[in-house]
Amino acid sequence: MTTQQSEKLRVFLSWSLQRSEAVAQAFRDWLPSVLQNVRPYYTPDDIGKGSRWASEIRGELESSDFGVIFLTPENLNSPWIVFEAGALSKLEKSKVAPLLLGVEPTDVSGPLAQLQLTKFNKEECFKLIKSLNRALDTRALEPTVLTNVFDKWWPDLEVKVQMAMQITLPPRGTSKRPERELLEEVLERVRAIQMRSSVGIASHRRPISPSELASRAQNDVSLRELGLSVRAYMTMRESGLRTLADLLALSEFDLIRIPNFGKSSLVEVRHALERYGLQLRQNDNGDAV
Image (tube, rainbow, N blue to C red; front, side, top):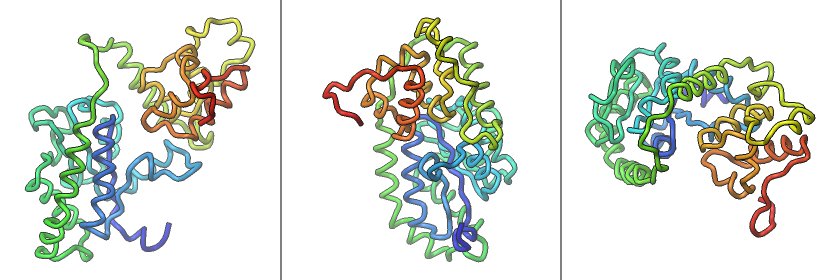
């Protein structure tokens, strides 16, 4: 990290699920136009190639000076949001700001409700920017300059956030998810974060052996038994994939369309399947991704 980067105010952007992610990315791109002395951190793009995913996020959380949490109706109870908010709790309450997108303050409960809740509108967002500017201390912009810069760049953020909030959400069933499934997801996320960096990009468990896999039905083999990285496994799980049979029903093109999946995860899945003499469904045009 350069000296110039280390001197900047580190702002951690916490998000979960598709609309929140799109807004966080827009905010990450927009913020340095208003405050040049800040370094917003947004996953996954700000994680370098080959980085140890969980350990790097933990490191950023520990070294951040300010946190912005992007809350939407669909992620209010996200285990990921709860985890990152808990890690940011080391900061003063005035330096952690949940940004409410289609959410009212009365919708927010638990520890998040005790923080500096900010509704997404020009007036409230300017208050957030002023808080960030104050945290810059001697590098802060003069009030008049800050107002002028914010007024100039606000329309850009407003348009991008409006577009992000128009993203169509995946259909959801009318029934609530089973309590057991919710608990399992929370435990899996916590275990993923707690894995020691000494094992690199850690798998949930030792991969199933080829002989054992051959003796079981594909719809009875969980994806976590394939020895995939935490990131690849969790991304597929969040898209609804659970078993080997689910995975083999897809083509490479199908996988690469999953939000945040990426080519590195695709290569990882290819190699994992090759260990068992398996491959994904052929793409319709026969080409590789």
